[in-house]
Length: 436
Image 1 (cartoon, helix red, strand yellow):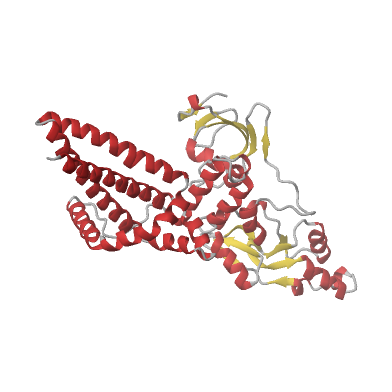
Image 2 (cartoon, helix red, strand yellow):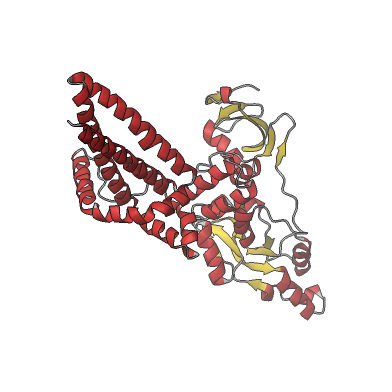
């Protein structure tokens, strides 16, 4: 091999290394770029962002084309470099030297350096290389499709069906993960994170998870004297109160304070002349399995703000209002008639005293915890579920990274607990303790 041929081949190898670095950086930039950011820029008329958005619509084809071209370049560069080194160092030693040199060059200049540069400014890098990459994807589309078909066929023989593109995470889960990551990095405040997560959870949270339980509902017997009914409504913190007759499952209507005041005005302020039933509205019932998003849509379409929750047998389980659903998004809403939220009392030693009726969703939101709420609605329900028994006062349990001490029990109901987060060295799951 002449010196001129040696120089030409060396120049080709260097050029191929530059190309390899370009495609490696392009792969990193196009996969790391935020689709939401790019879409926002594209919607605002940025033509470069529009190119990136169209290019990343089919990421499988994009990555397939880049990997195909990049591997061809690296293999060709390695082959040429080997031919150059073997010319000077014949035999196996030349092959080993060429392998070592090309490995170092490819790792440093064609992988690590361009990918590090691309990850620092993925959106900007992606907009610069989008135009040439569209031509690469277009030209290699047939080969990429053939490779994808071959890979799927081989995987199918091993029982792995990847013929249909199935997302591992739902869109909601991806958004939750993104907002949690930004919160951990300090770029999103807790209140903003809670609002976004609350909105995402509407379609996965059922009414029975947030409803006011039947035992805590305020209801009025329709057979009571008119004066007693009026006094109850006017002294209540609520504007809508269910009215029952014969038994508490037989709800005959919803008594609205505003409608009742209108009837009192018509009767000249005389209680005995007030037509109570004329102020009663038709009750609205909703199944316990209805999601919050479905119920919110139902409230808007029916112009209702109040729903009675029933189980599969039609028995009253509780009630939900429009405000309850909105509070799942924006947090607790208190007006001049609301009592302050009770039940969660942080202590100086880092523990928290909690009433048993506090819901897991409210507790997690207040303390920024992640206690599971799939098997139970309240904190007392979670302890009973995990302990598989109704614990006695003084018993201590450890699970989900917390220690739970039973502070109070009334009949079969846990009324108060002390919850202490465990440190990293003590987060092992333990069986219930019998300490009294």
